[in-house]
Length: 259
Image: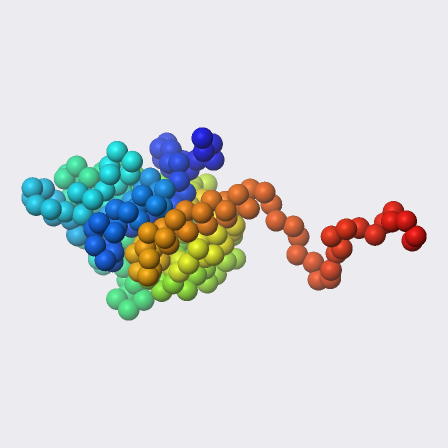
């Protein structure tokens, strides 16, 4: 039994890996990757789901909701009003009162508009949503989002889909040090070592999509990410040795015969 669980807004998750649903070669491959990942939370772009006519085939048909918690997201929204409307639509359609809140401020970098993001967070929290906002790796913005009622903060590791890995590790450390809610590194992971590093920095979880969906073998990469997140978390809890400028012998010479 996994006793090191992730707790967000009173809900317990067994896995600290959160995955997405976009960019897979097919829905069937997506389903296999989800299974291999061991994740129990998956984020779904509300605008990619036909929630007005559920009789038609949808990617939701390929998600085992008995095992996976659906986290709707407001991908593609560029204003607070637009994001709030999208979240409300998802809740009215019965998807969830949880939302991964995205308010994009720039089309090329896909960096969030933090001013609009904070505004949308305040509105949705007042309406009873559990809000998980995607933001820049800015400790001040993360604090403001927490003060606005966010149930977790989700700083980016690097631009969405870039695969660059964690670009500002010290910012992630600072955010984790001062945050009173879970910190989930979202965006920028390219391979398993990036996920491990994020967890070693103290992140409570990692959310990714492209790194798995865009891999040559998404199913194998999903399993690699599962192991990477577990490994990084265990290493963080174990506590690494201090960095030193000079060597230290693995076998101490003190007490050896002949010295």
